[in-house]
Length: 134
Image (spheres, rainbow, N blue to C red):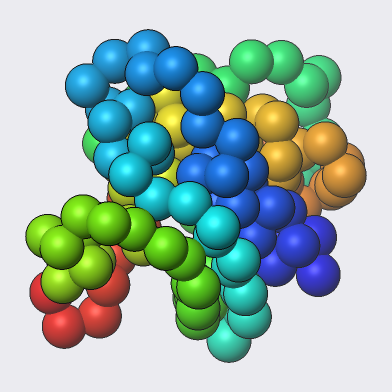
């Protein structure tokens, strides 16, 4: 349940606590508000038996490759408001919180690693969110 809870909190915080825009990547954040996320894991494949390493800042790499991948398949339902008609018609709101390496590093370090010292402690990168059929 750590993944479900922390992923939902990350997405809600990403949009609902958006302040000033740090970069062009933050522009979408300011156009979406009132976000409520519901995450349900439908398949989870742990990355194997590894001993937790000393926790540190995640070095998010492109592409996201590793020796022991953790695969998580989940459904994501979002309730949100936006006045931007183009955003209403796209999947960008679903994928945007995972779009940049900076966003993914925040997701890993500040959300997934804080409550769980076993499954996600060794996690160092996360891939983009992929929408089935795209």
